[in-house]
Length: 250
Image (cartoon, rainbow, N blue to C red; front, side):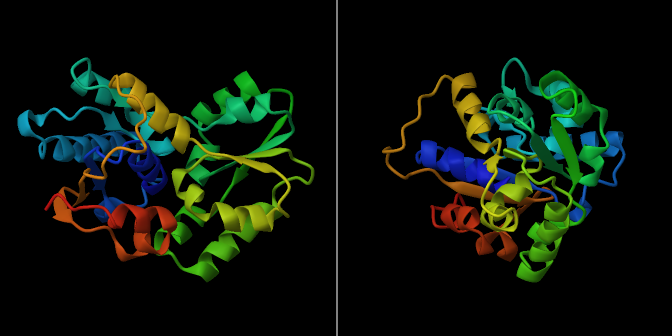
């Protein structure tokens, strides 16, 4: 969630952010859909409970796996009082930019009907190649450069030459976009969801971007419901370092 949170912080430096992480149950890919729903709701409720009245301005789900399985039950629980904003792999804008494209995602998301439907809708007839990025999300979580390099290389080798765009279908991948670009020879354009999700969040709460606002927004981190700090691995990435430099809510 670091990339989306960092874009929100840049757009509204005065906004208070609560990052609800779930390291106790990661990775989510092998979990059943019901288990993913349970974990997402638990994280959202834990975050909401830190806000007076239990009603944050919005619940943002900056994860494709969580969004695929959990948006309907989350919206049933929080809306209409609290808008819920999910994350959709940016296949549509990548296809509109001109094909062919590749869609990098986790093994679970690559195999999902959800992603297949998006490809069929926006990039049919072989214009999109799904690429299952084995181990890349876990490598990003570890912040181990060697693991990241190996996982990126694995996915790059399975990406057809000549693609014009690469969809980053997991928000973890945003954190290593430079490594991905280098592995692909600097040619295809990368498409990420962070800016679109942040923009939709501001629209849903009726707020305008105010990047020059006073940087008074605080950061609160929950680790499987417990008050915590940003994990050390997060600080290895510019987005995590940027978030950590703001004021803490604790």
